[in-house]
Amino acid sequence: MATPLSADRLAAALRGEGVNVIEYGDWHSHNRNHKGAFGPINGVMIHHTVSSGIDSSVRLCYDGYAELPGPLCHGVIAKNGDVYLISSGRANHAGRGDGDVLNAVVPEHTLPTTTDNNTDGNTHFYGFECVNLGNGSDPWPEAQLDAIERVGAALCRAYGWSAASVIGHKEWTNTKIAPHGFSRATMRDRIDRRLNHEGTGDSYTVKASDTLSAIGRAHGVPWKEIAAANGLREPYVIKPGQSLTMPGKPAPPPRYEPFPGDDFFKSYPRSPIVTAMGRRLVEVGYSAYDSGPGPQWTTTGRMSFRKWQQHLGDALAYCDGWPGPRQWDALKVPKVWPPQAARTGRLTYSPTSHEMRYHP
Image (cartoon, rainbow, N blue to C red; front, side):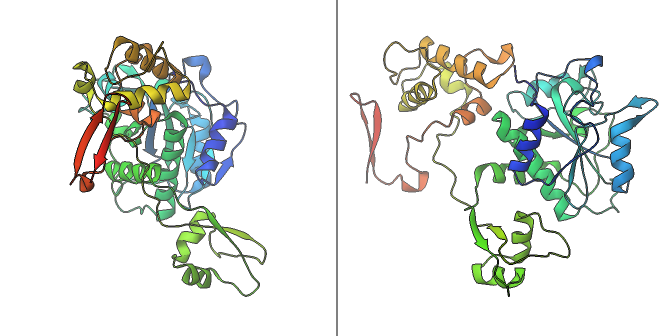
């Protein structure tokens, strides 16, 4: 099963994505674990506080109230992009929701319309509260949206999920309202772009006469992107000798084979994609092969993929050896077909090497 991250790993995962983390109170041990299970973890849920003011909002989420004791989430995302961690265990954030939604989140399928409230979401989701009234008149600053994106991407990376594992509270239960001015679908698009496009990671050392705007002009990068990449906020002070991370153009996505679909495997295909998958499973150490692997999908290939599913920590029902899209994407099977734009030549298959070769 997908187990919760330790407090230290949770904080490290967020910081690794560029989140400005503030550790609040006794957050390492502040939880509701005595009231129920936390795990298996299957996704991230985004909420809004229906409040204003960071101090009062964080305190409310930390303490809770008489009818609903705290913690009420794992982290609070402020308008300036700061993320206050208040728990690393079970929290009272999701409540009961539709089990059909959970069954769609796990394999990362399209979410159904919520009709029932029959499943405990506090067991299965991380929860992050965004400070916002949600009434349409309270703005969503870019710094806050950027932090939501980074939080979602950080946890998706930690578990090998795609952006489809990040949902809103309204998508979990029909007893909640969606905040105005915040699009869950657009946020999933942002998280997806972040997961699949890495920056260059170049750095620049500040000189005595430098300003952010001058550095930005010299590198062809908007100065606000430099500030965001380095966690700088008003008054945007930089000092000589300071090392700045320079955001670069997105790198092209890695050449991985896209998920070929459920029906592909259940037809027991003979394909170079199967060979590439098998070789990748051998490479990462999750193989049941005595020989090969070859291009034919077999029970041995299915047993090997089941080892990979177990490694990911998926629930028993999803460790059946049949690849799902999230599990496939996490494996990163090298691409064996040329890009669509390049398919103007001829493809031949080598039965000796089990490879597809392209002849322009």
